[in-house]
Image 1 (cartoon, helix red, strand yellow):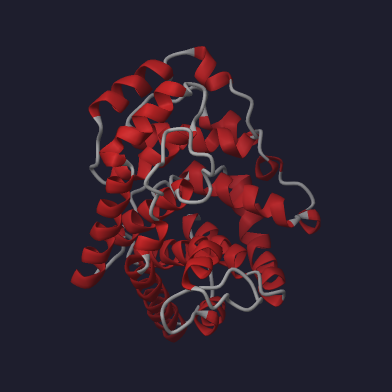
Image 2 (spheres, helix red, strand yellow):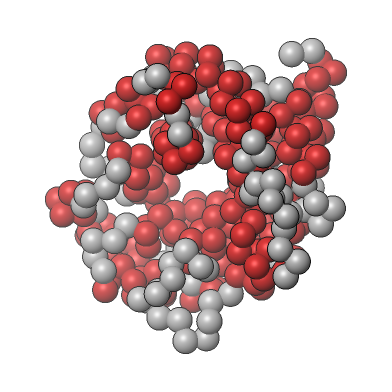
Length: 310
């Protein structure tokens, strides 16, 4: 990659990420819990999961190289909003206490804990539960086991099992025929990388054969998903690239993401029209916009050589 292309890539990554963060910040009120929300959470994907995604995006934005004061303030406001929605951690504690086999309280808590938002009773409960065999024996897909393990690591809890065996159990760990990668498996693959590398903090944690496999096939997959306007998955693949020991994502990929981002910062999940209603638009495109923040922030961070090597 030429110096000019690298400069363009950084500029586009900063532009897309900053605008996306601004959209999340300005529209955060659309991600509020109904007044009667309890620990049962009849629709966990409606508000609960997006709060965790916003917190993760905000935390990564704060880690980005050269973060500006306005971006820092927006990221802090997103974290504060999400923590308030979770009743300063009480909702997570009540949910985990009521459903001890569920892992989502830990997973939602992790990005808040990493940003300094702690809940003493939840910490104690999670320490107790993660010390049991039952917590780690819950039936889950291999990439989901990695998600729980990384959430535990982020929160300062011990991890049951070694990272090598957890990685080998995934689709990516087996490195199968790359041309048979379907949409759902692609998401499983991206999250395997996210959790093994702790969202780019540990780029050398990926086994060498997996790095070689991804280095060879990521550009192909990016081209395929960009061609059919699957912007959400394309942004996730950009994060995968930024988690590798030597990221190689080109400026052209960032041009494509920048070209579909709306002036208000929203990044659409695919090539379909964005709903004109702001609440439906938030529901449909919150995830992609949060992922765009993460992709840009991590690209800037890796370009600055600020990621520690473990």
